[in-house]
Amino acid sequence: MHADSCQLSTAPIIPSTPVFAPGEGAEAQFLGIVRGEEEGRPLTGIDYTAYRPMADNLLAALIEQGARTHGPHRVFIQHRLGFVANEEPSIIIRVRTKHSAEAFDICRWYLKEIKTSVPIWKRPVWAKPSPPPAA
Image (cartoon, rainbow, N blue to C red; front, side, top):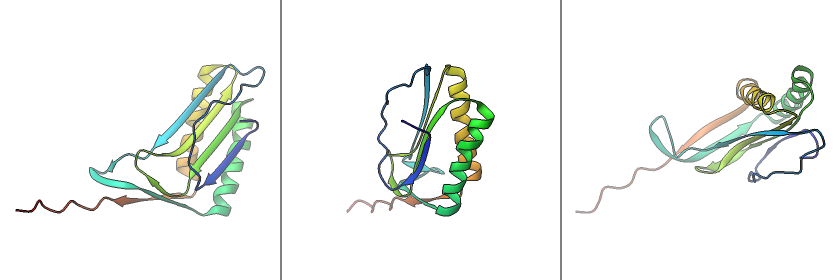
């Protein structure tokens, strides 16, 4: 995490802990994992799509707004696109600040803004029902 960045990518999310910069004392990380069920129904994963030009612009604008609104911090955001199997990460948000409380608050703010304003859509891929056992 050398600079603020965001990416929409089909690449897997690999959580890591990069080196802290001078003055940083806290990191809050949100890792969203695809659950094995939704609405009580089993699924094999979620297919994520996005309107890329708008989504990329809005993510960049969120980082700029975050800096203006929340003061000095670093952020890294990666959201998967395409099929993401259950139990795999679909989003990671990592926020670095001086203090822990602000890191948590800023991380929560980015998650809320991404979910409510960035055109990323999810389509559940339902598991096929198991055939009845042979008699």
